[in-house]
Image 1 (tube, rainbow, N blue to C red):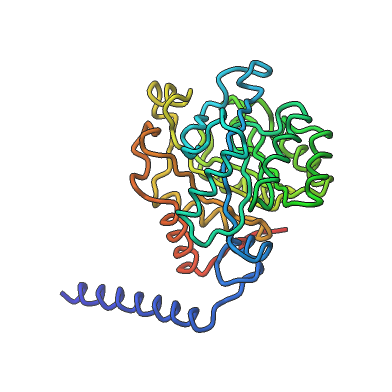
Image 2 (image 1 turned 120 degrees about the horizontal axis):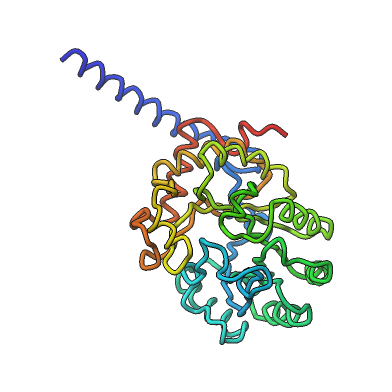
Amino acid sequence: MKGLQNSLQSNFLKRLLYFGAAFFLYLYPMTYPWGDSRPYNSYNRYFREKFGSRVQKVTIDAGFTCPNRDGTKGTGGCHFCNNDGFNPSYCRPEMPVSRQIEEGISFHRWRYKRAVSYLAYFQAYSNTYGDTGKLERLYREALACPGVMGLVIGTRPDCISREVLELLRELSEKAYIHVEFGIESVYDETLALVNRGHDFATARSALEAAASFQLSTGAHFIFGLPGETRQMMVDSASVISRLPLQTVKFHQLQILKGTRFEQMYQDHPESFQLFGYEEYTDFIIRFLERLNPAFVVERFAGEAPPRYQVTPGWGMVRNETVVARIEKGLLERNTWQGKLWKP
């Protein structure tokens, strides 16, 4: 009985200390290096500071492909890739870019009442992979749409050229231009295993080339790819932190239907060490502590519809719940993005 009383007293004191600390931070919020009281460098803060209001991405499928889909480097694409799992319903490549943007803005005005400005997000596959004249026509069509303040262009590190960089620099003189590179991993063995078709040196070179043209850049990484231990993923923070980046986007690996990973998972499920929800939030906190605090974190986790997932995943947990749990964990541990970062 005495042990139970001690345990209850201990839990009461812990809760009292937590709520006391939370109340103190409410009255006297801590300001982190990026200028607000959130314990990570958030995408919302970045856009409020840059544009003065909420900015919403409008996703576009402009009908591009990839060099490891069309036979240039391979076929079948990356083993994890099924772009349908992340494309909104209004994205249809047979529709003009301007029409997709119009429908996307209508959708977001209904869902996000505060959105007043938009970025056209060329998301599906490699959106710098094509004739420069065609690229310029599509980019300018998007920028001419009412309410569009700039472009976010998703692509691969091996699908960028000097001509494209020159075009993007020209466009950036009058609009916000951000190039988002799918890098996925800093380890060459992993990139080869997932049929990525390029190595990490290619990714580094592409980012350095874009930076030399004064372009804003972002990078996408996947955590939980086969062959990588949890410690390898944590250690990758120091490598990523040295890249010339403005934003980063992180996803946990999800096994999607219609991918090569679906068959590999069915044949050898033991090769995949997928993250559970609680484990992933704990991992992200450890990773963030080692991440360059100058990087704006756009996303912590992916969210594919259940009908596309081979495994149960995290059930009905939404992205905003993941963010709230990570932020709460950072505050409870009195830690933040970059606390353990060593320049």
